[in-house]
Structures are given as structure tokens and as C-alpha cells.
Image (cartoon, rainbow, N blue to C red; front, side, top):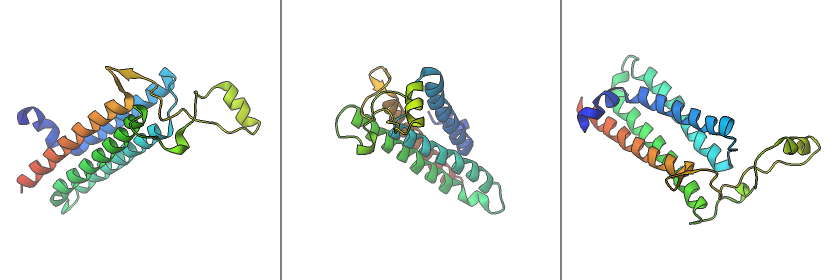
Length: 170
């Protein structure tokens, strides 16, 4: 298994950037082409991926600077924390969808954003985003938040492997 992961572990910061871009692109594609309006927790999950993207890019530069290689393992640990945070937000969201616990009070809207909503907002009404407690889409029984939790957990694990590998190279 390590041989299969070797090319990814070797360039983990780049892989983390590519994965963050892919996850963000997927979320935006569901919104744009599928018509799935994001709830507040969906947007929080995206924020974590934006942070991972920015950190990954910064870390790619850092490790190439003079003295930068000594930070290679640390950057992988930080990326592991980022993916773990993504997993945490996604688990919280999926748990709210499954009614294991209540979602945040600020996320109890209903419906999707429409032209009528836009007209109402122009006339002074406030927009209510979709509820965090209602999964808009499921595949194999898991919502987008559930899939994000599994993917983020796996990516956190690969980040840990990359960090251990970088530490062993010293």
C-alpha cells in the first residue's frame, strides 16, 4: 500500500492543493449545475477547503526556500489538522442531517433561492438559506456532508503518513 501512495506522499502539499481545488469545484458544480443551494454548514465546509488550499500553496513555497526543507514534516501535520477540521465540520453537518443532534439555530431556513426570493429581497425581505438539517442529495445513503467526512478523514490519514514519511527522511 505504501508503494501505491509513494508518488502522492512525495508531493503531498501539491496533492492537498489539487484535492482542495477538486472539492471546491465539486461543491460549486453541485450548486451551479445541480441547483443545490448551500446551507450555512456547507459554506463552512468550503471555508476549511479554502484554508487548506491557501496553506498548501504557502507550504509549497516555504519548503523550497532556504531552510525550508526542515519544515516539510510540519507542513504535512498542519495539513492533517486542516483535513481533520474538515472532517469535524462534515460530521457535525451529517449528524444534524441525521437528527443525531440539532443543527445551529442560524441554519433553520427552508427551500432554495429563486427569482421570487430575489424580488422579495429587493423589496426588503431577508433570504432564508436551506436548512442544515435537510440533506439535499444522497448517494449510497450518505449526503454530501457524509461523503465529505469520509474523504476528509482519509485525507487526514494520508497527511499523517506524509508527515511520518517526511520525518523519517531526516
